[in-house]
Image 1: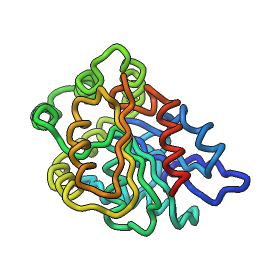
Image 2: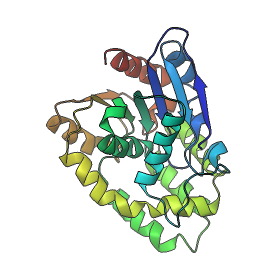
Image 3: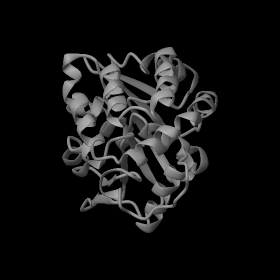
Image 4: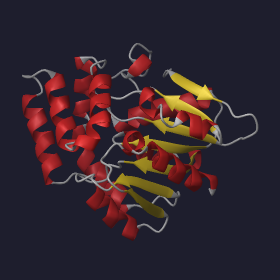
Length: 258
């Protein structure tokens, strides 16, 4: 079972489950715990291969898939007897949440998707192709650092950039390769997400400077009636780290109304 941390509220029955991105761990939510735990029950998860789930027995396979990763999360919810939860995710964690909502909408009360990945632009597609070409020839941290600097290029992105590089150093090369292998799923999966509306209330919480993913999210929200967009000024991709006060207030207000 996945490693997790749970914070139980004295009176609330509402659960909020946090899902980090590739190369991260539950520690990326350290600026959220206090505010969210004051209002809800909080569940933080280390996804397979990450954090303290690196040595945890989870379903094996020569290749990983977003379906597998989502099923890991679902099995943990079952173990903890959490029938329904709000989800909060960041970066590739938003894909895990959205895929899980596709299969088990009855388990998802709402989705708050920070730095949401809903379409790969030309630059990101080039990076994926380049990564697949050289991943067996260069150290995996070279690729991760390259992506981090391209995704988070500005001076005010430095804290979140360094956090994710530091967390990624704990990820074994074998695990990185398995996660990177899931990039082959992204095209069809993201097309499905953009074409199909779940009907689940969804908040896209994006940074104004998220040049890779904000434009596509703006177009998606125009088409999906149950989706909402909040853009945080002077903020990059990792909104929960760069602007935690704004992130927490907007997300908590959204969840409290659902």
